[in-house]
Length: 559
Image 1 (tube, rainbow, N blue to C red):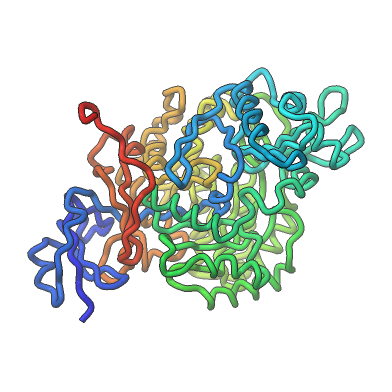
Image 2 (cartoon, rainbow, N blue to C red; image 1 turned 45 degrees about the horizontal axis):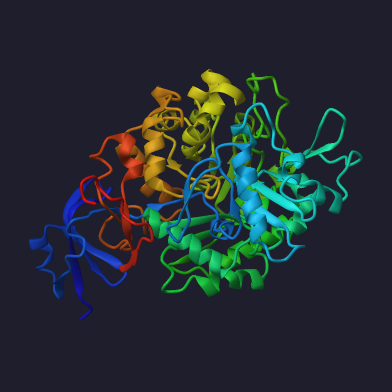
């Protein structure tokens, strides 16, 4: 008889309103057998006691429904972002607070490269953090005038390159491509905005960066999940699924020992030329769905409509950007979007759509409404992902259409000051990432990191949604705060729901997978501002135990 292992804990939060807390959890094989008191659970046949979690708090394993497996690839390059970050191995990387810090780190990385012809690749930059002076090719030329330099911006929607790179790819005053930023004299500055312009230098990052993955990157990504208590991850936009060689990248890495579940979405539109027609891609995804396993899921699709608000490339309705900047860049035409959306919808495929600006949310709504009028489909759960400037009226329509909103709460912290002061102004910023409004109108929500755009870490995401604090300590829209309880539900059952996995993960209930986040403190008992500081000991995934690589913080008086 397979044993039933009973794990007592200091507190268990189940996210099941029928039994919201428990003293212990009983696991048999990969699944939860029961929750209750230790005495109750030890009456089950074959029950044995395992006290490894006696001092810990257990909650459902977090579900990250918008992230990128290429996160595991990013750490092969040099990090030059503003905020401190921790890599999957547990090493903490200090942020670069000024352009001079960025240059200094790049000079150090340049000195470590052995091959004089190899490009220097970096990531995490956002020029909006450095008002008054925009990082340009001239800055990067101080690092090297002999090797190409390429920095992927934190959003993934822009890049910066040096003069060597511009020359190597023939980008000059005569280059007439939307997104190639030029100075007052008409010369390229080295900044490339959105995918068409970035593609001009694509050979520099071939096999690297967020849109590329391999087995090593997948394993690093999964360890990042363990470090943050995330047991279900999403690769929201893979370009590998349309051929069997790319498919094997995932299938070779995600085995019984892989410490997370991975839901892989095909990047169906918005990233340049597609590999297959929409019809053929839909047929392929339906076929791949049949190849899914408990750990590895296929059969969903992502479509992208616009850019980023902090990069001024998102599409906004009136009154537009705070400083009167030109409206953003459509990733695709509305007609092509409608064709893609309709094709995948008719095939029964779950569709998540990148909608940063409210103009893109409006297009999502109007397109979905037209498609559903022709092809009704109950319980579709199509999702506006990011949903950053979605309005009250739009949330009412999303609810009426049965759509979900995956809200980018991390933006409140990462760019809140810039949104209030530079991008959309204090009034519209107070209405951004409006989780409270979405909940009031009955829209199913989740909260996400879009890792590596912001760090993976659902506890921090909870904190941002509950406090709405910016880096400077201001509150960006106090009336859009949500409770810690609602935030916890959003990063567990909420994410599971919009992945159509809520019957398997997202709460601790008998019959579901034994996926658990093991925490040092209870996120519903600490002050909201401290939720993001809770230490994660590790996870349980399908009854298997996985340890975090991040050392527990040393408490005062224990040194």
